[in-house]
Amino acid sequence: MYLTHSNQVKGLSTTEYEALREMCRYAKNLYNVGLYRPPIFLCRRALLTLRVELPSSERQRK
Image (tube, rainbow, N blue to C red; front, side):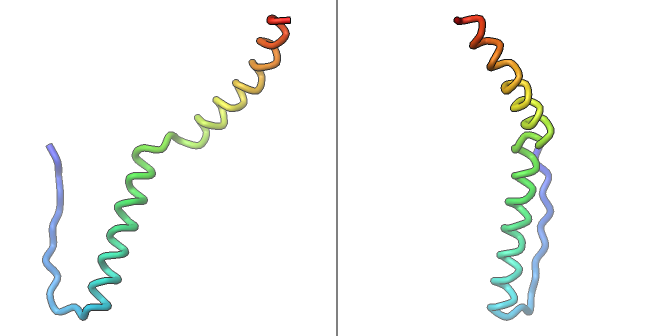
């Protein structure tokens, strides 16, 4: 189920409407970044784990 909220804004000039439309787009993009991008601490933990494990795996190959 998708929940949406719609408002009808009347009486805006063209420049005000364009500014409002741009701000809404930025808000949507910011929400999507927060929703779909993994948290930074998980990325850093994975990188630290990779850096620690990589040299040991190379030693086992030699």
